[in-house]
Length: 95
Image (cartoon, rainbow, N blue to C red; front, side):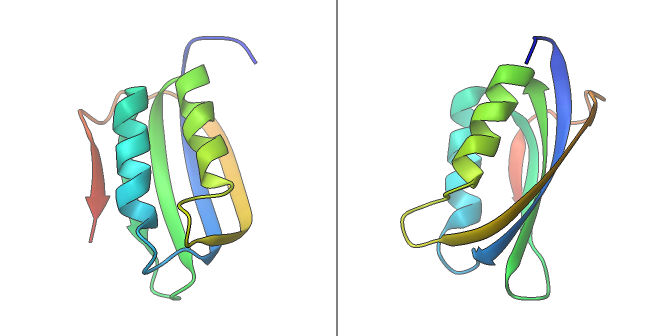
């Protein structure tokens, strides 16, 4: 899919709250050198995230999100790629 830096917005639905999805995504993102954030949404069944970094590394985090951690049941992942903004210095879990 090419190189360069990208930004991706993710909306992940399913059993993704209370199963360490956010903590695991943070670990995967940090390992890949991807910056951004992840948080639970108030509906109780969705997580949203913004990822920034090299395209191939961001795509690896996106691929991980399709299955998530062992106790998660991911039903749907919506991904929207956009222009890299360089907005983040780290990857954090938002509360």
